[in-house]
Length: 317
Ligand SMILES: C[S@@+](CC[C@H](N)C(=O)[O-])C[C@H]1O[C@@H](n2cnc3c(N)ncnc32)[C@H](O)[C@@H]1O
Image (cartoon, rainbow, N blue to C red; front, side, top):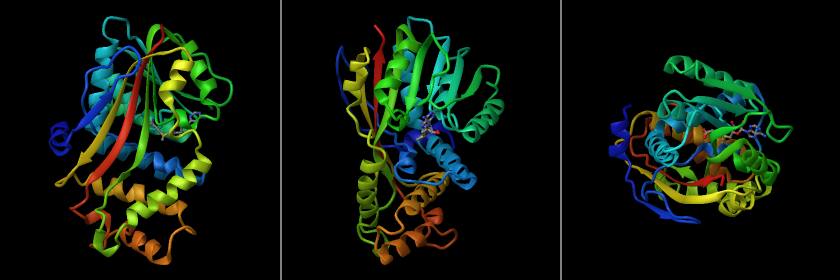
């Protein structure tokens, strides 16, 4: 699907909350990530990684306009200084790394993740996009000793900071890695993507109930999600240049990838909710997820995508 499609389909309302030394260009909205996939306990097997890779890829595809808008904004923020080296922390399958490689022509991009599988997927894409010579991957657990990356002109962390066991430590490492005058751009999800109307097919409030249960699980298992990242970035020594909230509202007609995105998302949700929802709700979820039926999200043409994401642009003084 083309970019133009995404732009037409996303109702971009947005607000921007300036923090620190002023706001960047205001606007937009879009964006949400598959963080829900991480918001509950999940397996570590190959099937799990395959599902995660699919979800991350679909997230990047369906929310293309968000990513495109953010990287354009970051490009503006980075203007005036060198931007030869870019570091994507917790890169997954490369949504950010690849978008940045395309946005910052000629820059070297280092994609870091603890998952060899996700990095292999990323490398395949670099070849398809013709940027393999400029994008390299580093497999590393950022909760352990950090590889030496620096100095970098731009560090990018999308939906990854909250995974760090000790975000303060990670931010200290990032601060030391970014050159003076360089940027850290951190994106975090505020709510999980939603796809269904409140009274969806007789399962009134189903998606809201799923999200409520997941919020409880998330609070226990991913305690750093929803942290006051602006304050943490400042504490690490960065100057916040802008904090922008991107709301996504994609309405029908939407590309077919939307159905696959909804299915992949609901599958992840379903896997964490086994004993926590009523039998009726679990059955309704299964109907939505299961492949080919007319009520399955894969074939539905009435889905919307709603999500919210916040992005901080912070500069090392
Ligand atoms: C929600 S995904 C986001 C992926 C990508 N940034 C994106 O926006 O599509 C979080 C990523 O962080 C990685 N991650 C989590 N903890 C990590 C750690 N301690 N060290 C390195 N990577 C980590 C995961 O493997 C996963 O790829």
